[in-house]
Amino acid sequence: MGLRGIGLAANQVDLPLRLFVMNLASNPDEDEPHVFINPVISSPKGTEEREEGCLSFPDLYAPVKRPERVKVSAYNLRGEAFEGELDGLFARVVQHETDHLDGVLFIDRMSETSRLACREALEALTSQFEQRRG
Image 1 (cartoon, rainbow, N blue to C red):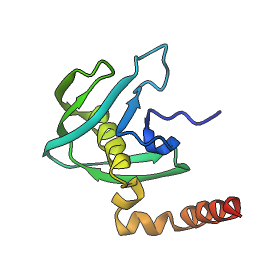
Image 2 (cartoon, one colour):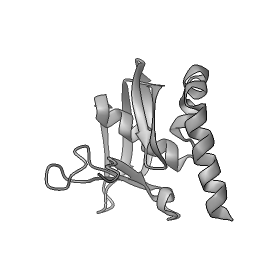
Image 3 (cartoon, rainbow, N blue to C red):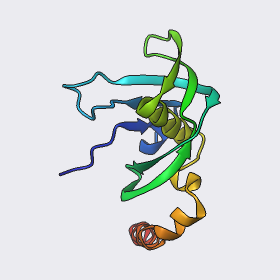
Image 4 (tube, one colour):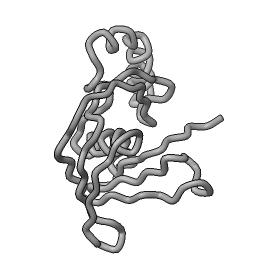
C-alpha cells in the first residue's frame, strides 16, 4: 500500500506558492479536493490532541495538540475569497497544511515526550535523507 495523504502543501513539492490541497477521504472518487490559496487561520478555540502523520515523514505518527476549532480565510482556484469556521479533522488538516506553508512541521508541534518516543524514527529519517544528499 502506498502513501495515502489527505493534504499536500505546494512547498512540499517545491512549488513557490502559498497554496495547499486536501481531500479528507484520500480518494477523488469519494470526496472532491479542497484548494486553499493564501490561507489565514484565526479565532482558535479549544485544544485537542490527536495523532498526526505527514507525507514528509513516512511511517511516523505522533500525538499533536492543536486548537479544536479555527476560522480560515482563503481563495479558491477561481480567485474567489471564502471563509469558514472549521472543526474536527477538517480543522486539523487545514492547520497542518498551513503550518507547512509557514515552515512549521508537525514534529515541531510534538511534545518533548512524544519527540523522545519518536527519536529513533526521526534519526533514521535524518540518516536516510543525508545518504540521499550524497
